[in-house]
Image 1 (cartoon, rainbow, N blue to C red):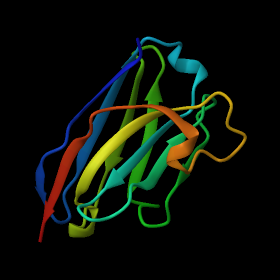
Image 2 (image 1 turned 180 degrees about the vertical axis):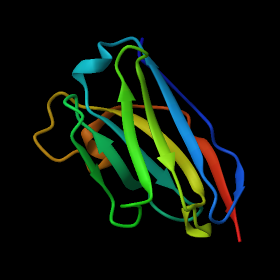
Image 3 (image 1 turned 135 degrees about the vertical axis):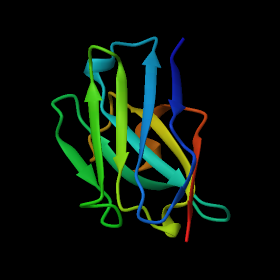
Image 4 (image 1 turned 30 degrees about the vertical axis):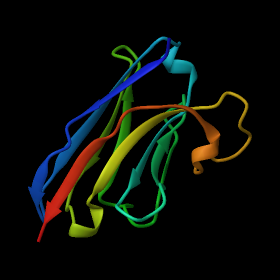
Length: 125
């Protein structure tokens, strides 16, 4: 059974930093692309960042230069370091395991097979 457990979300002031973690079990972690998405109230789930098995990364324009995705294959964990946080970053953040059958860029929710329960990030102004 595949499980993803996110942690690290909390209330932070604008300009602050947070690091989210996502621990994965039940599959060969190093073989899969991993992604972070977020969903604010009343909005669709949106792509934040992804990292392939070879550590190649892609970011949404809205977070480029502020967020960094990384992975530790020995710990089966993917991270999202978030710096210079803004109030518009407020959302529930989800990690996800990429489908082995996707031929895309892993920027769409449909390209992911397994999801965590989400962790709330709130940025106050």
